[in-house]
Image 1 (spheres, rainbow, N blue to C red):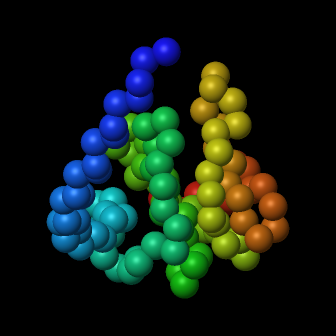
Image 2: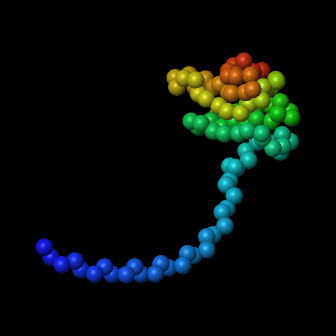
Length: 108
């Protein structure tokens, strides 16, 4: 059996460098008309984006450069899901559960 070699002492650690302050996360570029104000929720999925405006009860959908406006009624939209890939039907989640886009009245 070989004799044990003495362990080297640990080298001192370098002092930590100060961290850069966190930058605020981008909420994405605003793509809706100014008169609607601030969207309570917005998002995008599969080339489509949406924004919901509770004060005016409006849901905006942009698909393939086409902007459509819907009356959201008493729904407070907070999420989106694509129901099926072949017909691209959309459904949204609200305080009342799932809302199919086809059930909302299109204004423009």
